[in-house]
Length: 133
Image (cartoon, rainbow, N blue to C red; front, side):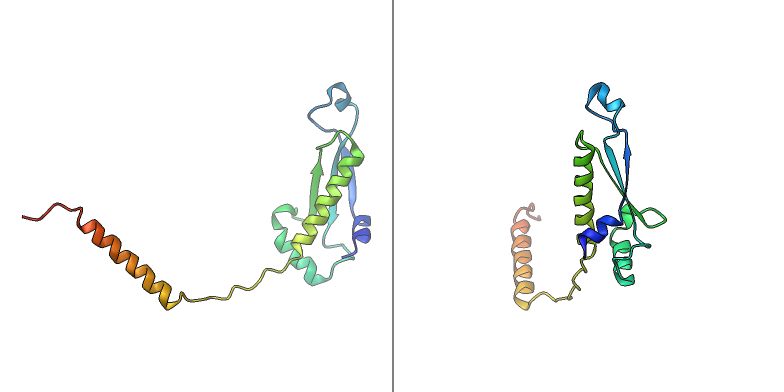
């Protein structure tokens, strides 16, 4: 994964942010929105694109565009930096292939141990009952 080439494919939009800042917040566009078109990216193969679209399904639009926004800082440059780092982390985690689960059976000793504890518990509870007349 070439980070510099990926960052070149990103599009940014500066928007007016809400929150702290007083009168200054109404004049300055400090919130940054990051756009990444997954299907038209040249950095990923078709398999990687399918894996990313599957893993990042909740964060993609209908057109397979990844949207991230950041308004944590009052600085536009800092927000841009934060959103780029989030994007790179998302892509890195999205490319991980989950391990195949190997179905296993419980061991004989664990089965026997479970049955023994059930019997002890039932025996203990049987003494709590009122005696039958």
